[in-house]
Image (cartoon, rainbow, N blue to C red; front, side, top):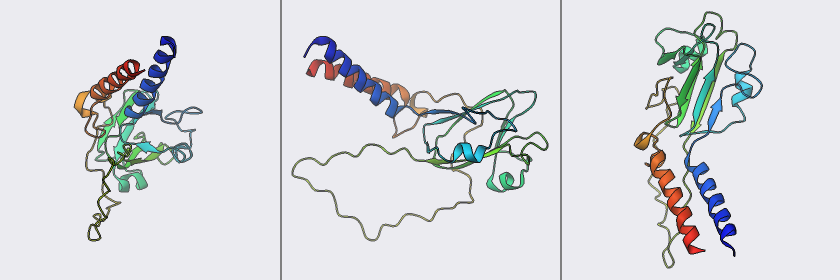
Length: 197
């Protein structure tokens, strides 16, 4: 196999690994809308599987809208008092750092009741399963281990302010690795593949 083919294979492998390591940016309402009164946000969010490490980007005219993260009860009643966080910059970035449900509304009077609200259900990003080593078998399941009951009405345990720059270093938090570590891992794996071929 020629050097060019080896380099191409290594580059494709690095790109695939990098995509797995880095979250996805979702512009709220895109591609047909934005953070506005015309977009149906329930329809926009329903087909998307949001994962920890992903980012929400709210783009809007800062003179006309804002973004409030609120509790479930305030979301249902469109109550703007005591928000978890507020931003009116026109470009609000929210890091989805923990599994759970997050609630966002526009705090301008009449906008939330007019449909400018979105519920985001965040799932944990799963890591690839590690194959067992030859000659070993997985441990048997524990019949007494049961997960703790979920509390659907409670806000996520880790609250991220609505305006949050993309995480850096160890703040990125997927499987305990930050983005820099993941990039270094992907680069190292790519170099290893180049040498191995």
